[in-house]
Image (cartoon, rainbow, N blue to C red):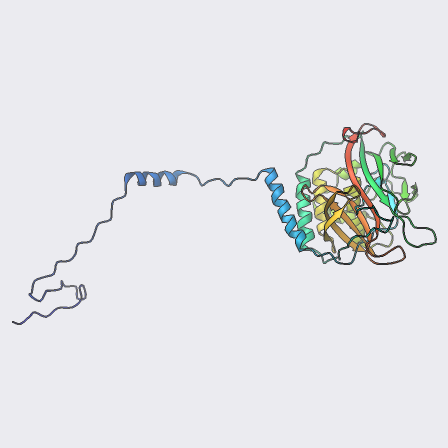
Length: 384
């Protein structure tokens, strides 16, 4: 019996395939899509009407923890090396300006338990502009400063600063420096510069700080202040009052330009003068939060600024330091590694010389209290 030939693959010619017996093979019917359940359809419609979920914010304590973790990462990548920054040999006291505590409130250091002047610390090498660790650290310090709360200081009040300080001395014949014991220092500075200030150091007599403006100068760390005939006619970066500091630009570029125009210092390069001036303002004034933040961001723009992962102030508080090396010395600003509050400042030798080996501490301080009072000699509650 002759069989009818098969016509090919299903759908190849558009015809139905045939069986050998001539009968047509029925096409398998397509399975219809399963209908969507009413509940699922309703949930989808409601979901399309809802707004996207909000991104949760960070609590203040969580922000601090994150900042601390970032800081640890930055500090871990910084390598201490053997160079250091130099502070000018001549120190100024601005009276009743905020730089009056110049040789006092500004320097941070190591344990001073050994022989005076022979305590040594590691120093960090200066870097190129925009050193990443220093920029990141200063940016976090600036952020913390801008978020801090500080009461306003009236023009008729005094800014009070309590610190612990020690500065090395050298004999007239030269030779190694000698570090005296750390002692307490109190300074009262007229907020608007209209009234005399007061300097009171442990173990010494009170010093009246001028009658109508900045009038005293330190020729060297620890020296007795003397009249300054070269003082300007009004407050400035070198001779600030609190009112002047509060009026400084909060734009870091504008602030750094102003500092460069006004900061003085014999034998210093412009970048080191700017770095020293910013350190003095951080240590010896009670700047409003936004000005403090601008000072830190201005320091980011100074070439050669580096990070010292661990530094100890004159009160024994350990923190992280921002540093710069110039002229055989390194200046370090020490900050609390959790809150980023300014703790103090330290100056060390970066090169061996007559004064001592590299790492010898030349000056150390710790800022303990800042506040506002009604008269010179009065202590704020936190200092009593």
